[in-house]
Length: 234
Ligand code: DX5
Ligand code: ZN
Image (cartoon, rainbow, N blue to C red; front, side, top):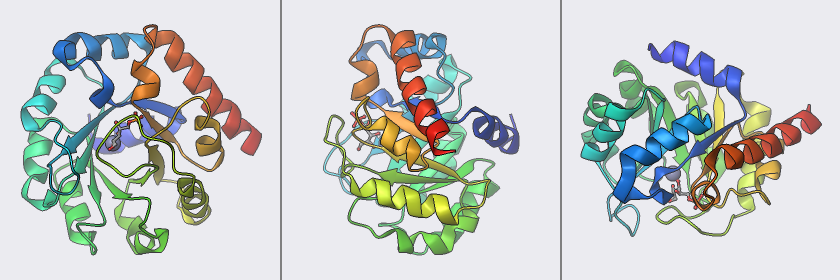
């Protein structure tokens, strides 16, 4: 699907829960992806870590390719790596639909974001909790997505950092309608409503999603909490 149609579909469907495969049963990856798809998820989040930008390693190109082979869901690939420019084409070729890079490793990310567009993917820009939101604002026109980190990236299961909420509110107040806002880290039933109320459209959930056996029910619960918060906001 052309990325413009994919982005339109995502915009129509927000708020969306993006299960983060980092927290799934990786020994049964194909089965997990099918279960998430059957539960009704409309997007999957994949965390790529290089042991350099973040103090952890997760998975890389072969895993993105493997996931691509078993699903048509959009793959939201979060690059927590120091040299994203070296790998953009390869992740796109592996099947990424959205590619998100970090401003901390690309302080002037305009060219990389345009390269992502040229590859036919959606371009995302992420910022860590200590990074001020004003640093990403000059680049919003180059972005389809801004991913606000609500934990220091590298590990699932961390506590939600409230500073993300002010960033979401600020971005929500300055964004054009075609920009998606996403939040990642510590999103759970306690925090998801505040995230959606602050403007988040895509709510990445690892532990909070995969720690429950009944995926359809979990997805419905989280979606309903996010929807209610957005409706209250409107
Ligand atoms: C953190 C990753 C997240 C992670 C979220 O470095 O970017 O996507 O999977 O995990 P939870 O939802 O458990 O905080
Ligand atoms: Zn992530």
